[in-house]
Amino acid sequence: MKIQILGTGCPKCIKLTENAEKAARELGVDFEIEKITDINKIMDLGVMMTPGIAIDGEVKSVGKVLSPEEIKKIISK
Image 1: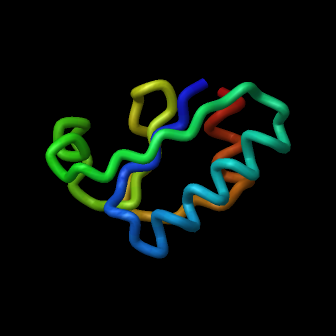
Image 2 (image 1 turned 90 degrees about the vertical axis):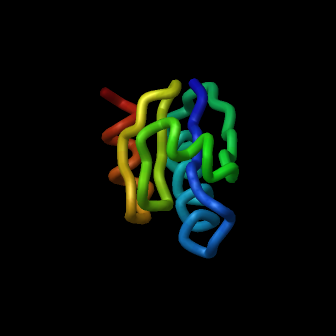
């Protein structure tokens, strides 16, 4: 599973990354974190507000920091 964090590296993006890693570890899934910081690539995914999170290339959330519990629900679907 590829978890993509979409953002420029702001504190919210960093927290979202930490929460995503925690959620994936707690679920025991095999995952890779990719940070996408290039604003053009972020916009190519249709994201206009950061931070955003995508799972396997599909955007799941934009503009907020999801908790580990919220991320677990997304990963489990």
